[in-house]
Image (cartoon, rainbow, N blue to C red; front, side, top):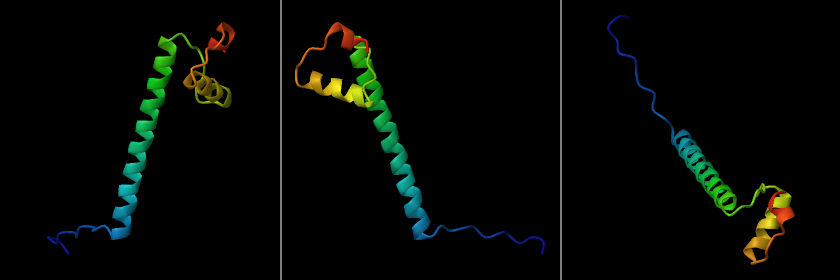
Amino acid sequence: MTGVIKGSYILTGEIKELRELTRYRESLVEKITQVKNEIRKILEFAGYKIQPFDKKGRQLLEKLAKGEELSKKRRTS
């Protein structure tokens, strides 16, 4: 059958929804990464050499959020 145009694939509603959810999730992950990088940059600028998103780092961030000072030793851990 020559000269026949192949039909287009039309997405089902379920596939459209899954694609939309996937794009939304990707945008959320990108935003989370941007915020984490910004937090790291601010901490580094303030002289804190900590990993803010592991267990110990979150504890140190909580102390900073409460207005507590960190010792020099903890600033570099």
